[in-house]
Image (cartoon, rainbow, N blue to C red):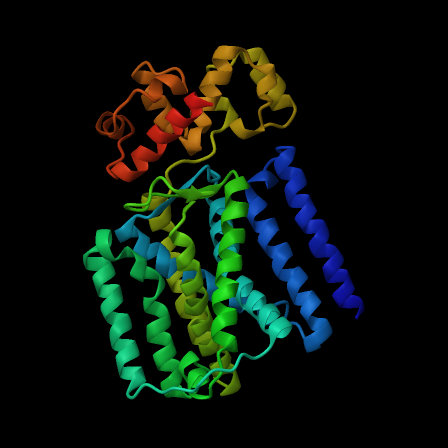
Length: 396
């Protein structure tokens, strides 16, 4: 009982600490707001559920392995994103060790977050009964359809990118069914819908929290989804929230697989090793193809008067996000606003300055082809993000 209470208190402190360092721009902690938000949430729910389950589901000896598996699991989608290019990252730390630690611990929250949320929902609302049904040769159809969906996604990404969020569920639920592990189809055959519904709701809840905490973060992702570039809640296009429902199912099929191996006394070591290898392969590719900008070191801000820069440095400011803009003149403020516009970044900012662009208003006048050439970005959807952001900024 004492450990439960201690973890609840710690999680609350960690959550509040995340907001404190973000609002006060305390470096380098301000870049890890997303991490403090999610891990405090996971620890809090896990500690809370121990009052009912009498054991920790996440904070136990399997946690390191679970983080590595979760990271590898999400990196599969990062690899797919190299093809579909539906999201990209901005304002990431320049230091590789900080960035890779951020990848590991951020992606490592995916499985724990959905799993603990699903368990809470199922604990609160219990089983939901329905009329049993069975699909003959289900594993064959499910696995085959899953393979087909990922092939269509990779071959025709502009049309089939939504299938990214269903292929894994189809393949693994079919496999779990064959192996005798927990599966949604086995639940349906028993007339049980509780796990299925709880999984979808957990995906939606976590999806909303992902978008809320990402929206407030400095280091974050931005979407450039075909056909849905305008209607957004936070950074996510509105239809994308449907995908969170399915992603909850997708994640639970992997959890069922992992739990099934544990029940059958099979080691998670090979799965952990494979997941680690996927992560190691993915991180450099994410850096090269998915990261759009890094946080700008303060010593690069030559447009700020040297006396002010020296004062900021003396106060421990290391990047442009630690600057008190109230101490800048109007021209400096406009340049910092341009640098920070949707995480434009120093490289793209410098390229624009070479073209004579001094503020966001001037950027808003560019067409997408010209801006694409200046910032050397071939993905026109990404370029449109900045043009639209500049035009919205000018309307404020």
